[in-house]
Amino acid sequence: MAKHWFWWLMTMACVVWYSTITIYVAIRGGADIKHMLARLDATKAREDREAKEL
Amino acid sequence: MTHFNWLLDGSIVGLYLMATMAAGLMVRKYVGKVEHFLVAGREMDVYLGIASLAATEFGIVTCMYTAQNGFEKGFAGATPGILMAIAMAVVGLTGFVLKPLRDSGVMTIPELFEKKFGPRIRWAAGVVIVLGGLLNMGVFLRTGGQFLVLVSGLDVKYLEIMMTALLVGVAVYTILGGMLSVLVTDYMQFIVMSAGLIVVTILILMNVGWESMVSTVELQYGAGGFNPFINPTMGWQYVLFNLMLNTAAVLTWQTIIARVLAAKDTATGRKVYTRTSFFFVCRFLIPGIWGIAALASLGPVVNSLEAMPRYLSTSVPPGLMGLLIAAMLAADMSTDSSYMLTWGSVIYNDIMAPFRKTQWSEKRGLFWNRSIIAFIGIFLLLYGLWYPLKGDLWTYLGVTGTIYLASISVLLIACCYWRRANSWGAGAAILISAVIPITYLVMEQVPATAGLAKSIGPYYSGIATYLLSGAAMIIGSLLKPQSATPLTERTA
Image 1 (cartoon, chains in turn brown, blue):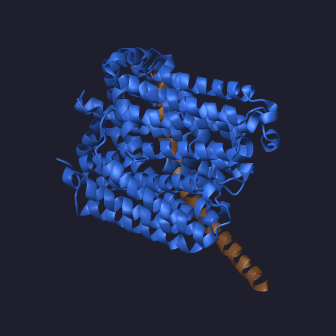
Image 2: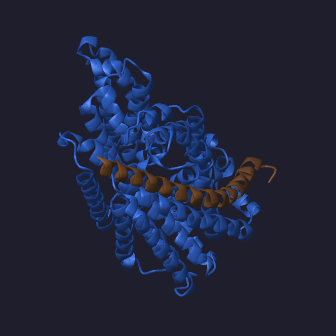
Protein backbone atom coordinates (compact mmCIF):
# COMPACT_ATOMS: atom_id res chain seq x y z
CA MET A 1 0.00 0.00 0.00
CA ALA A 2 2.80 2.40 1.01
CA LYS A 3 4.85 1.51 -2.07
CA HIS A 4 2.11 2.33 -4.54
CA TRP A 5 0.30 4.95 -2.47
CA PHE A 6 -0.64 7.03 -5.53
CA TRP A 7 -2.72 4.29 -7.14
CA TRP A 8 -4.17 3.22 -3.80
CA LEU A 9 -5.26 6.81 -3.12
CA MET A 10 -6.66 7.16 -6.64
CA THR A 11 -8.65 3.91 -6.31
CA MET A 12 -10.05 4.87 -2.90
CA ALA A 13 -10.83 8.40 -4.16
CA CYS A 14 -12.72 6.90 -7.12
CA VAL A 15 -14.85 4.64 -4.91
CA VAL A 16 -15.60 7.34 -2.31
CA TRP A 17 -16.08 10.25 -4.74
CA TYR A 18 -18.17 8.21 -7.18
CA SER A 19 -20.43 6.83 -4.41
CA THR A 20 -20.97 10.32 -2.98
CA ILE A 21 -21.58 12.02 -6.31
CA THR A 22 -24.03 9.30 -7.38
CA ILE A 23 -26.22 9.88 -4.32
CA TYR A 24 -25.92 13.68 -4.60
CA VAL A 25 -26.68 13.75 -8.35
CA ALA A 26 -29.58 11.30 -7.87
CA ILE A 27 -31.21 13.77 -5.48
CA ARG A 28 -30.33 17.08 -7.18
CA GLY A 29 -30.71 15.74 -10.74
CA GLY A 30 -34.30 14.68 -10.04
CA ALA A 31 -35.06 18.24 -8.93
CA ASP A 32 -33.34 19.58 -12.08
CA ILE A 33 -35.65 17.46 -14.27
CA LYS A 34 -38.72 18.69 -12.41
CA HIS A 35 -37.68 22.34 -12.82
CA MET A 36 -36.68 21.88 -16.47
CA LEU A 37 -40.07 20.42 -17.39
CA ALA A 38 -41.86 23.14 -15.40
CA ARG A 39 -39.93 25.86 -17.28
CA LEU A 40 -40.72 24.22 -20.63
CA ASP A 41 -44.40 24.05 -19.64
CA ALA A 42 -44.39 27.73 -18.65
CA THR A 43 -42.67 28.78 -21.89
CA LYS A 44 -45.20 26.80 -23.95
CA ALA A 45 -48.14 28.34 -22.08
CA ARG A 46 -46.71 31.84 -22.63
CA GLU A 47 -46.13 31.24 -26.34
CA ASP A 48 -49.67 29.83 -26.76
CA ARG A 49 -51.09 32.90 -25.01
CA GLU A 50 -49.06 35.27 -27.20
CA ALA A 51 -50.15 33.41 -30.33
CA LYS A 52 -53.81 33.74 -29.33
CA GLU A 53 -53.39 37.47 -28.65
CA LEU A 54 -51.90 37.95 -32.11
CA MET B 1 -20.48 -21.42 -16.17
CA THR B 2 -21.98 -17.96 -15.79
CA HIS B 3 -23.76 -16.90 -12.59
CA PHE B 4 -26.56 -15.20 -14.53
CA ASN B 5 -29.95 -16.32 -13.18
CA TRP B 6 -32.72 -15.79 -15.72
CA LEU B 7 -35.49 -15.38 -13.13
CA LEU B 8 -33.74 -13.12 -10.61
CA ASP B 9 -31.24 -11.25 -12.81
CA GLY B 10 -33.56 -11.30 -15.83
CA SER B 11 -36.29 -9.60 -13.75
CA ILE B 12 -33.89 -6.83 -12.65
CA VAL B 13 -32.85 -6.21 -16.25
CA GLY B 14 -36.46 -6.31 -17.49
CA LEU B 15 -37.59 -3.85 -14.84
CA TYR B 16 -34.78 -1.46 -15.72
CA LEU B 17 -35.61 -1.62 -19.44
CA MET B 18 -39.33 -0.94 -18.87
CA ALA B 19 -38.64 2.00 -16.55
CA THR B 20 -36.19 3.57 -19.03
CA MET B 21 -38.54 3.22 -21.98
CA ALA B 22 -41.45 4.69 -19.99
CA ALA B 23 -39.38 7.69 -18.85
CA GLY B 24 -38.02 8.27 -22.34
CA LEU B 25 -41.46 8.24 -23.91
CA MET B 26 -43.14 10.34 -21.21
CA VAL B 27 -41.26 13.55 -22.03
CA ARG B 28 -41.99 13.50 -25.76
CA LYS B 29 -44.98 15.83 -25.23
CA TYR B 30 -42.60 18.68 -24.34
CA VAL B 31 -41.01 18.64 -27.80
CA GLY B 32 -42.60 21.36 -29.92
CA LYS B 33 -39.59 22.93 -31.59
CA VAL B 34 -36.26 21.92 -33.15
CA GLU B 35 -34.52 23.72 -30.25
CA HIS B 36 -36.34 21.47 -27.75
CA PHE B 37 -35.36 18.42 -29.77
CA LEU B 38 -31.67 19.25 -30.21
CA VAL B 39 -30.70 21.20 -27.06
CA ALA B 40 -33.66 20.61 -24.68
CA GLY B 41 -34.73 24.24 -25.03
CA ARG B 42 -31.39 25.13 -23.34
CA GLU B 43 -32.98 24.42 -19.97
CA MET B 44 -30.51 21.86 -18.58
CA ASP B 45 -29.16 22.54 -15.09
CA VAL B 46 -25.87 21.44 -13.44
CA TYR B 47 -26.72 18.08 -11.84
CA LEU B 48 -28.75 16.80 -14.74
CA GLY B 49 -25.79 17.84 -16.93
CA ILE B 50 -23.35 15.88 -14.78
CA ALA B 51 -25.55 12.76 -14.92
CA SER B 52 -26.02 13.08 -18.67
CA LEU B 53 -22.36 13.75 -19.50
CA ALA B 54 -21.12 10.90 -17.30
CA ALA B 55 -23.70 8.43 -18.66
CA THR B 56 -23.04 9.41 -22.28
CA GLU B 57 -19.27 9.10 -22.06
CA PHE B 58 -19.31 5.66 -20.48
CA GLY B 59 -20.49 2.89 -22.79
CA ILE B 60 -19.76 -0.84 -22.79
CA VAL B 61 -17.09 -0.19 -25.43
CA THR B 62 -15.39 2.21 -22.98
CA CYS B 63 -15.55 -0.39 -20.22
CA MET B 64 -14.07 -3.07 -22.50
CA TYR B 65 -11.11 -0.96 -23.66
CA THR B 66 -10.29 0.56 -20.30
CA ALA B 67 -10.42 -2.91 -18.71
CA GLN B 68 -8.15 -4.14 -21.50
CA ASN B 69 -5.77 -1.27 -20.66
CA GLY B 70 -5.72 -2.44 -17.03
CA PHE B 71 -5.15 -6.03 -18.13
CA GLU B 72 -2.32 -5.16 -20.55
CA LYS B 73 -0.66 -2.17 -18.88
CA GLY B 74 -1.56 -2.46 -15.19
CA PHE B 75 -2.41 0.69 -13.22
CA ALA B 76 -0.50 2.81 -15.74
CA GLY B 77 -3.30 2.01 -18.19
CA ALA B 78 -5.50 4.54 -16.37
CA THR B 79 -3.20 7.41 -17.46
CA PRO B 80 -5.53 8.67 -20.26
CA GLY B 81 -8.34 9.05 -17.71
CA ILE B 82 -6.16 11.21 -15.44
CA LEU B 83 -5.11 13.35 -18.41
CA MET B 84 -8.71 13.79 -19.52
CA ALA B 85 -9.79 14.76 -16.00
CA ILE B 86 -7.04 17.40 -15.85
CA ALA B 87 -8.01 18.77 -19.28
CA MET B 88 -11.69 18.89 -18.33
CA ALA B 89 -11.06 20.63 -15.00
CA VAL B 90 -8.78 23.24 -16.60
CA VAL B 91 -11.25 23.94 -19.43
CA GLY B 92 -14.16 24.16 -16.98
CA LEU B 93 -12.31 26.45 -14.57
CA THR B 94 -10.93 28.80 -17.22
CA GLY B 95 -13.85 28.68 -19.66
CA PHE B 96 -11.29 28.20 -22.46
CA VAL B 97 -13.28 27.82 -25.73
CA LEU B 98 -16.44 26.91 -23.74
CA LYS B 99 -17.29 30.53 -22.97
CA PRO B 100 -17.13 31.94 -26.52
CA LEU B 101 -18.82 28.77 -27.84
CA ARG B 102 -21.79 28.84 -25.46
CA ASP B 103 -22.07 32.66 -25.56
CA SER B 104 -22.41 32.51 -29.36
CA GLY B 105 -25.78 30.70 -29.00
CA VAL B 106 -25.00 28.08 -31.68
CA MET B 107 -26.42 24.53 -31.63
CA THR B 108 -23.34 22.82 -33.14
CA ILE B 109 -19.61 23.60 -33.48
CA PRO B 110 -19.66 23.98 -37.32
CA GLU B 111 -22.39 26.63 -36.96
CA LEU B 112 -19.82 28.76 -35.12
CA PHE B 113 -17.25 28.13 -37.87
CA GLU B 114 -19.53 29.73 -40.47
CA LYS B 115 -19.27 33.07 -38.65
CA LYS B 116 -15.48 33.04 -38.98
CA PHE B 117 -14.62 30.84 -41.95
CA GLY B 118 -17.72 30.92 -44.16
CA PRO B 119 -20.37 28.34 -45.20
CA ARG B 120 -18.02 25.99 -47.07
CA ILE B 121 -15.85 25.36 -44.01
CA ARG B 122 -19.01 24.90 -41.92
CA TRP B 123 -20.17 22.22 -44.34
CA ALA B 124 -16.74 20.53 -44.57
CA ALA B 125 -16.38 20.54 -40.76
CA GLY B 126 -19.86 19.03 -40.49
CA VAL B 127 -18.87 16.21 -42.85
CA VAL B 128 -15.63 15.53 -40.92
CA ILE B 129 -17.47 15.48 -37.60
CA VAL B 130 -20.22 13.17 -38.81
CA LEU B 131 -17.83 10.82 -40.64
CA GLY B 132 -15.44 10.59 -37.70
CA GLY B 133 -18.28 10.28 -35.19
CA LEU B 134 -20.35 7.71 -37.05
CA LEU B 135 -17.41 5.52 -38.07
CA ASN B 136 -16.25 5.65 -34.45
CA MET B 137 -19.70 4.73 -33.19
CA GLY B 138 -20.06 1.99 -35.81
CA VAL B 139 -18.23 -0.51 -33.60
CA PHE B 140 -20.11 0.18 -30.37
CA LEU B 141 -22.98 -2.29 -30.91
CA ARG B 142 -20.92 -5.38 -31.62
CA THR B 143 -18.47 -4.73 -28.78
CA GLY B 144 -21.38 -4.13 -26.39
CA GLY B 145 -23.03 -7.34 -27.58
CA GLN B 146 -19.79 -9.31 -27.03
CA PHE B 147 -19.70 -8.17 -23.41
CA LEU B 148 -23.35 -9.02 -22.79
CA VAL B 149 -23.23 -12.54 -24.28
CA LEU B 150 -20.00 -13.36 -22.42
CA VAL B 151 -21.28 -12.16 -19.05
CA SER B 152 -24.81 -13.57 -19.33
CA GLY B 153 -23.77 -16.82 -20.99
CA LEU B 154 -26.21 -16.25 -23.84
CA ASP B 155 -25.57 -18.11 -27.10
CA VAL B 156 -23.49 -15.86 -29.39
CA LYS B 157 -25.98 -16.48 -32.24
CA TYR B 158 -28.44 -14.20 -30.41
CA LEU B 159 -25.98 -11.27 -30.28
CA GLU B 160 -27.31 -9.52 -33.41
CA ILE B 161 -30.98 -9.97 -32.46
CA MET B 162 -30.40 -8.77 -28.88
CA MET B 163 -28.48 -5.66 -29.92
CA THR B 164 -30.95 -4.89 -32.73
CA ALA B 165 -33.83 -4.96 -30.22
CA LEU B 166 -31.85 -2.73 -27.87
CA LEU B 167 -31.04 -0.23 -30.61
CA VAL B 168 -34.66 -0.12 -31.78
CA GLY B 169 -35.80 0.62 -28.22
CA VAL B 170 -33.23 3.42 -27.83
CA ALA B 171 -34.08 4.83 -31.28
CA VAL B 172 -37.81 4.96 -30.47
CA TYR B 173 -37.46 7.24 -27.44
CA THR B 174 -34.67 9.31 -29.02
CA ILE B 175 -36.71 9.89 -32.20
CA LEU B 176 -39.79 10.91 -30.23
CA GLY B 177 -38.26 12.92 -27.40
CA GLY B 178 -34.88 14.10 -28.73
CA MET B 179 -32.53 15.69 -26.18
CA LEU B 180 -35.30 15.82 -23.55
CA SER B 181 -35.67 12.04 -23.63
CA VAL B 182 -31.90 11.67 -23.72
CA LEU B 183 -31.47 13.81 -20.59
CA VAL B 184 -34.22 12.10 -18.59
CA THR B 185 -33.10 8.57 -19.52
CA ASP B 186 -29.44 9.53 -19.01
CA TYR B 187 -30.32 10.56 -15.46
CA MET B 188 -31.88 7.15 -14.72
CA GLN B 189 -29.10 5.35 -16.55
CA PHE B 190 -26.44 7.26 -14.60
CA ILE B 191 -27.90 6.03 -11.31
CA VAL B 192 -28.21 2.40 -12.43
CA MET B 193 -24.81 2.42 -14.15
CA SER B 194 -23.04 4.02 -11.18
CA ALA B 195 -24.66 1.66 -8.66
CA GLY B 196 -23.49 -1.34 -10.71
CA LEU B 197 -19.95 0.00 -11.21
CA ILE B 198 -19.46 0.87 -7.53
CA VAL B 199 -20.92 -2.36 -6.09
CA VAL B 200 -18.96 -4.62 -8.47
CA THR B 201 -15.72 -2.69 -7.80
CA ILE B 202 -16.13 -3.01 -4.01
CA LEU B 203 -16.88 -6.73 -4.46
CA ILE B 204 -13.72 -7.20 -6.56
CA LEU B 205 -11.54 -5.25 -4.09
CA MET B 206 -12.87 -7.44 -1.26
CA ASN B 207 -12.58 -10.75 -3.13
CA VAL B 208 -9.30 -10.34 -5.00
CA GLY B 209 -7.67 -7.91 -2.58
CA TRP B 210 -5.43 -4.88 -3.17
CA GLU B 211 -2.15 -6.63 -2.37
CA SER B 212 -2.93 -9.46 -4.78
CA MET B 213 -3.66 -7.02 -7.62
CA VAL B 214 -0.51 -4.99 -6.94
CA SER B 215 1.71 -8.10 -6.80
CA THR B 216 0.15 -9.39 -10.07
CA VAL B 217 0.95 -6.10 -11.84
CA GLU B 218 4.49 -6.10 -10.39
CA LEU B 219 5.04 -9.67 -11.53
CA GLN B 220 3.69 -9.13 -15.07
CA TYR B 221 4.83 -5.58 -15.88
CA GLY B 222 7.33 -4.53 -13.19
CA ALA B 223 7.59 -0.82 -12.41
CA GLY B 224 6.11 -0.04 -15.87
CA GLY B 225 2.74 -1.29 -14.59
CA PHE B 226 2.60 1.73 -12.31
CA ASN B 227 4.48 4.39 -14.27
CA PRO B 228 3.54 5.14 -17.93
CA PHE B 229 6.89 6.84 -18.64
CA ILE B 230 8.89 3.63 -18.05
CA ASN B 231 6.33 1.19 -19.47
CA PRO B 232 7.86 -0.20 -22.72
CA THR B 233 4.46 -0.04 -24.53
CA MET B 234 3.76 3.56 -23.44
CA GLY B 235 6.53 6.13 -22.81
CA TRP B 236 6.44 9.94 -23.03
CA GLN B 237 5.03 9.81 -26.57
CA TYR B 238 1.99 7.86 -25.31
CA VAL B 239 1.41 10.41 -22.54
CA LEU B 240 1.82 13.40 -24.88
CA PHE B 241 -0.43 11.88 -27.58
CA ASN B 242 -3.12 11.10 -25.00
CA LEU B 243 -2.85 14.60 -23.54
CA MET B 244 -3.45 16.07 -27.02
CA LEU B 245 -6.20 13.56 -27.86
CA ASN B 246 -8.08 14.06 -24.58
CA THR B 247 -7.74 17.85 -24.59
CA ALA B 248 -9.10 17.91 -28.15
CA ALA B 249 -11.96 15.59 -27.11
CA VAL B 250 -12.83 17.81 -24.15
CA LEU B 251 -12.94 20.86 -26.43
CA THR B 252 -14.66 19.46 -29.49
CA TRP B 253 -16.22 15.99 -29.15
CA GLN B 254 -19.75 16.92 -30.13
CA THR B 255 -21.46 14.61 -27.60
CA ILE B 256 -19.53 16.29 -24.75
CA ILE B 257 -20.01 19.79 -26.13
CA ALA B 258 -23.76 19.12 -26.60
CA ARG B 259 -24.12 19.32 -22.78
CA VAL B 260 -22.56 22.79 -22.76
CA LEU B 261 -24.82 23.90 -25.60
CA ALA B 262 -27.91 22.50 -23.83
CA ALA B 263 -26.97 24.18 -20.53
CA LYS B 264 -29.16 27.06 -19.41
CA ASP B 265 -26.14 29.43 -19.43
CA THR B 266 -22.35 29.49 -19.81
CA ALA B 267 -21.67 29.29 -16.06
CA THR B 268 -23.79 26.11 -15.85
CA GLY B 269 -21.87 24.55 -18.76
CA ARG B 270 -18.55 25.31 -17.06
CA LYS B 271 -19.77 23.87 -13.74
CA VAL B 272 -20.85 20.67 -15.50
CA TYR B 273 -17.28 20.33 -16.85
CA THR B 274 -15.52 21.09 -13.56
CA ARG B 275 -17.70 18.86 -11.42
CA THR B 276 -17.67 15.92 -13.87
CA SER B 277 -13.88 16.05 -14.40
CA PHE B 278 -12.95 13.46 -11.74
CA PHE B 279 -15.46 11.04 -13.26
CA PHE B 280 -12.99 10.60 -16.13
CA VAL B 281 -10.43 9.14 -13.70
CA CYS B 282 -13.12 6.70 -12.49
CA ARG B 283 -14.03 5.97 -16.13
CA PHE B 284 -10.54 4.53 -16.71
CA LEU B 285 -9.52 3.32 -13.26
CA ILE B 286 -12.67 1.40 -12.23
CA PRO B 287 -12.80 -0.88 -15.32
CA GLY B 288 -8.97 -0.92 -15.15
CA ILE B 289 -9.27 -2.49 -11.68
CA TRP B 290 -11.68 -5.05 -13.19
CA GLY B 291 -9.06 -5.82 -15.87
CA ILE B 292 -6.28 -6.20 -13.27
CA ALA B 293 -8.53 -8.47 -11.18
CA ALA B 294 -9.12 -10.59 -14.31
CA LEU B 295 -5.32 -10.80 -14.78
CA ALA B 296 -4.85 -11.80 -11.13
CA SER B 297 -7.58 -14.47 -11.37
CA LEU B 298 -7.21 -15.86 -14.91
CA GLY B 299 -3.54 -15.10 -15.61
CA PRO B 300 -2.36 -13.96 -19.07
CA VAL B 301 -4.88 -15.03 -21.77
CA VAL B 302 -4.80 -14.78 -25.56
CA ASN B 303 -7.81 -12.49 -25.95
CA SER B 304 -7.23 -9.67 -23.46
CA LEU B 305 -10.41 -7.85 -24.60
CA GLU B 306 -12.59 -10.75 -23.42
CA ALA B 307 -10.70 -11.39 -20.17
CA MET B 308 -12.72 -8.96 -18.03
CA PRO B 309 -16.23 -10.15 -19.05
CA ARG B 310 -15.13 -13.80 -18.72
CA TYR B 311 -13.85 -13.09 -15.23
CA LEU B 312 -17.03 -11.22 -14.21
CA SER B 313 -19.29 -13.99 -15.54
CA THR B 314 -18.00 -16.35 -12.86
CA SER B 315 -17.12 -14.00 -10.01
CA VAL B 316 -20.26 -11.86 -9.68
CA PRO B 317 -23.03 -13.67 -7.74
CA PRO B 318 -26.67 -13.99 -8.93
CA GLY B 319 -28.68 -10.87 -8.07
CA LEU B 320 -25.63 -8.66 -8.45
CA MET B 321 -25.29 -10.07 -11.96
CA GLY B 322 -28.66 -8.51 -12.82
CA LEU B 323 -27.45 -5.16 -11.49
CA LEU B 324 -24.19 -5.47 -13.47
CA ILE B 325 -26.00 -6.22 -16.74
CA ALA B 326 -28.59 -3.48 -16.12
CA ALA B 327 -25.68 -1.10 -15.41
CA MET B 328 -23.94 -2.03 -18.64
CA LEU B 329 -27.17 -1.80 -20.63
CA ALA B 330 -27.70 1.64 -19.08
CA ALA B 331 -24.18 2.64 -20.08
CA ASP B 332 -24.70 1.47 -23.64
CA MET B 333 -28.20 2.90 -24.10
CA SER B 334 -27.23 6.35 -22.82
CA THR B 335 -24.23 6.42 -25.15
CA ASP B 336 -26.21 5.22 -28.18
CA SER B 337 -29.08 7.69 -27.70
CA SER B 338 -26.78 10.69 -27.18
CA TYR B 339 -24.52 9.78 -30.06
CA MET B 340 -27.42 9.27 -32.49
CA LEU B 341 -28.95 12.59 -31.52
CA THR B 342 -25.67 14.48 -31.62
CA TRP B 343 -24.44 13.30 -35.00
CA GLY B 344 -27.99 13.76 -36.30
CA SER B 345 -27.96 17.36 -35.09
CA VAL B 346 -24.78 18.09 -37.10
CA ILE B 347 -26.27 16.47 -40.23
CA TYR B 348 -29.42 18.59 -39.91
CA ASN B 349 -27.87 21.82 -38.70
CA ASP B 350 -24.71 21.94 -40.82
CA ILE B 351 -24.58 19.40 -43.65
CA MET B 352 -28.16 20.13 -44.69
CA ALA B 353 -27.75 23.90 -44.15
CA PRO B 354 -27.17 24.66 -47.88
CA PHE B 355 -30.48 22.94 -48.71
CA ARG B 356 -32.45 25.15 -46.32
CA LYS B 357 -32.50 28.31 -48.41
CA THR B 358 -35.71 29.44 -46.74
CA GLN B 359 -36.72 29.13 -43.10
CA TRP B 360 -38.23 25.68 -42.43
CA SER B 361 -41.27 25.31 -40.20
CA GLU B 362 -40.70 23.72 -36.78
CA LYS B 363 -42.82 20.76 -37.87
CA ARG B 364 -40.71 20.16 -40.96
CA GLY B 365 -37.49 20.59 -38.96
CA LEU B 366 -38.62 18.04 -36.39
CA PHE B 367 -39.62 15.60 -39.12
CA TRP B 368 -36.16 15.79 -40.70
CA ASN B 369 -34.34 15.49 -37.39
CA ARG B 370 -36.34 12.40 -36.51
CA SER B 371 -35.80 10.88 -39.96
CA ILE B 372 -32.02 11.46 -39.71
CA ILE B 373 -31.86 9.62 -36.38
CA ALA B 374 -33.78 6.71 -37.90
CA PHE B 375 -31.29 6.61 -40.80
CA ILE B 376 -28.35 6.68 -38.36
CA GLY B 377 -29.94 3.73 -36.52
CA ILE B 378 -30.20 1.79 -39.79
CA PHE B 379 -26.57 2.66 -40.64
CA LEU B 380 -25.41 1.40 -37.24
CA LEU B 381 -27.26 -1.87 -37.71
CA LEU B 382 -25.88 -2.49 -41.18
CA TYR B 383 -22.34 -1.24 -40.60
CA GLY B 384 -21.64 -2.02 -36.99
CA LEU B 385 -23.66 -5.12 -36.26
CA TRP B 386 -24.51 -7.11 -39.33
CA TYR B 387 -21.29 -6.27 -41.19
CA PRO B 388 -18.34 -7.97 -39.45
CA LEU B 389 -15.51 -5.47 -39.04
CA LYS B 390 -12.02 -6.69 -39.97
CA GLY B 391 -8.69 -5.49 -38.61
CA ASP B 392 -7.43 -3.93 -35.44
CA LEU B 393 -10.20 -2.15 -33.56
CA TRP B 394 -7.97 0.16 -31.54
CA THR B 395 -6.21 1.50 -34.66
CA TYR B 396 -9.62 1.96 -36.25
CA LEU B 397 -10.94 3.99 -33.30
CA GLY B 398 -7.73 6.01 -33.06
CA VAL B 399 -7.70 6.89 -36.76
CA THR B 400 -11.38 7.89 -36.95
CA GLY B 401 -11.06 9.89 -33.73
CA THR B 402 -7.89 11.74 -34.77
CA ILE B 403 -9.23 12.73 -38.20
CA TYR B 404 -12.03 14.59 -36.42
CA LEU B 405 -10.35 15.80 -33.23
CA ALA B 406 -7.13 17.24 -34.67
CA SER B 407 -8.78 19.45 -37.28
CA ILE B 408 -11.85 20.54 -35.32
CA SER B 409 -9.87 21.43 -32.17
CA VAL B 410 -7.44 23.55 -34.22
CA LEU B 411 -10.34 25.25 -36.04
CA LEU B 412 -12.23 25.91 -32.82
CA ILE B 413 -9.27 27.42 -30.93
CA ALA B 414 -8.34 29.57 -33.94
CA CYS B 415 -11.98 30.58 -34.44
CA CYS B 416 -12.28 31.75 -30.83
CA TYR B 417 -8.88 33.32 -30.24
CA TRP B 418 -7.00 34.19 -33.47
CA ARG B 419 -8.24 37.19 -35.40
CA ARG B 420 -6.09 36.41 -38.42
CA ALA B 421 -7.47 32.84 -38.85
CA ASN B 422 -9.38 32.42 -42.12
CA SER B 423 -10.88 29.86 -44.49
CA TRP B 424 -7.55 28.97 -46.18
CA GLY B 425 -6.03 28.01 -42.85
CA ALA B 426 -9.17 26.12 -41.84
CA GLY B 427 -9.27 24.19 -45.12
CA ALA B 428 -5.56 23.31 -44.84
CA ALA B 429 -5.99 22.11 -41.23
CA ILE B 430 -8.91 19.85 -42.20
CA LEU B 431 -6.91 18.41 -45.11
CA ILE B 432 -3.73 17.75 -43.10
CA SER B 433 -5.55 16.12 -40.20
CA ALA B 434 -7.26 13.72 -42.59
CA VAL B 435 -4.20 12.95 -44.75
CA ILE B 436 -1.70 12.00 -41.99
CA PRO B 437 -3.79 9.37 -40.11
CA ILE B 438 -5.11 7.84 -43.34
CA THR B 439 -1.57 7.71 -44.81
CA TYR B 440 -0.34 6.01 -41.64
CA LEU B 441 -3.15 3.45 -41.86
CA VAL B 442 -2.38 2.73 -45.54
CA MET B 443 1.37 2.46 -44.78
CA GLU B 444 0.56 -0.11 -42.10
CA GLN B 445 -1.35 -2.23 -44.63
CA VAL B 446 1.14 -2.03 -47.53
CA PRO B 447 3.96 -4.59 -47.04
CA ALA B 448 6.62 -2.27 -48.51
CA THR B 449 5.92 0.48 -45.95
CA ALA B 450 4.65 -1.59 -43.01
CA GLY B 451 8.12 -1.63 -41.38
CA LEU B 452 8.43 2.15 -41.61
CA ALA B 453 4.91 2.60 -40.18
CA LYS B 454 5.81 0.32 -37.28
CA SER B 455 8.99 2.24 -36.53
CA ILE B 456 7.05 5.54 -36.53
CA GLY B 457 4.26 4.10 -34.37
CA PRO B 458 0.71 5.41 -33.80
CA TYR B 459 1.71 7.89 -31.07
CA TYR B 460 4.31 9.84 -33.08
CA SER B 461 1.91 9.80 -36.05
CA GLY B 462 -0.87 11.14 -33.82
CA ILE B 463 1.33 13.86 -32.30
CA ALA B 464 2.43 14.90 -35.82
CA THR B 465 -1.21 15.16 -36.90
CA TYR B 466 -2.05 17.65 -34.13
CA LEU B 467 1.13 19.72 -34.61
CA LEU B 468 0.98 19.84 -38.41
CA SER B 469 -2.74 20.59 -38.36
CA GLY B 470 -1.97 23.64 -36.19
CA ALA B 471 0.90 24.62 -38.50
CA ALA B 472 -1.41 24.29 -41.53
CA MET B 473 -3.90 26.65 -39.92
CA ILE B 474 -1.19 29.26 -39.29
CA ILE B 475 0.51 28.97 -42.70
CA GLY B 476 -2.77 28.81 -44.65
CA SER B 477 -4.21 31.82 -42.84
CA LEU B 478 -1.05 33.89 -43.33
CA LEU B 479 -0.85 32.99 -47.02
CA LYS B 480 -4.35 34.23 -47.80
CA PRO B 481 -4.20 37.86 -48.88
CA GLN B 482 -6.08 40.15 -46.49
CA SER B 483 -8.00 41.64 -49.43
CA ALA B 484 -9.32 38.16 -50.33
CA THR B 485 -10.77 37.72 -46.84
CA PRO B 486 -14.46 38.72 -46.79
CA LEU B 487 -15.38 41.47 -44.37
CA THR B 488 -17.52 39.05 -42.34
CA GLU B 489 -14.47 36.79 -41.85
CA ARG B 490 -12.25 39.69 -40.83
CA THR B 491 -14.66 41.17 -38.34
CA ALA B 492 -15.99 37.92 -36.87
